[in-house]
Image (cartoon, rainbow, N blue to C red; front, top):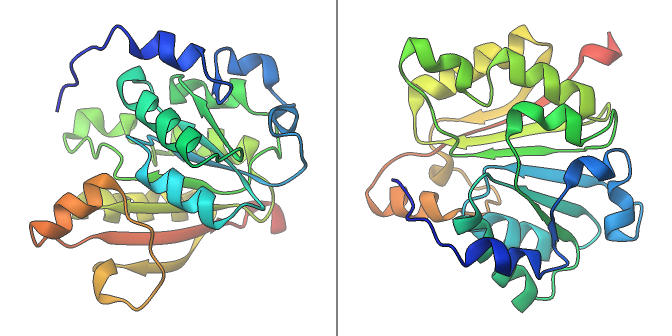
Length: 214
């Protein structure tokens, strides 16, 4: 769904200490933005922030970075985090193709990919955020014990992502084709609520990079 442009969104973001206007300037120094040495986790494609708001609230001993390209959704992340006084969240707007220019080696712990665009046409597969060229960028910035955690409603994308991950030295340590039938802790996103209300199944996996330990 195409978002209508909101001219007021960027000015409102710029007024907030949570929004980082020039993230490349902090490559290797993101801890300075949080004022602590806690682990840094990313949500790539954060939408309006329901997931990041709740995971940050439940894990105050970790720092979270919400990433999206659209000011029109990031402004809602900003409002929610300010309302809840979540000082362990920062908000970035940049093209994920350049993620390794924003974060330094070993700077990131876990990466969350919640309902990324599945790009089902074969000629568009390389745009998937689990495609090997993206995984290689994540590997550059991740710590040794880092995980990639994915949720989607799109089965072909889910199966392809498993292949991409395994071919790039990630171990799938958990997977399910019906998350909401499992008795595990789960923090829902806005999309997830809509899909569940329509009776759709949610697929979920947790993967861990094993390449450095070979």
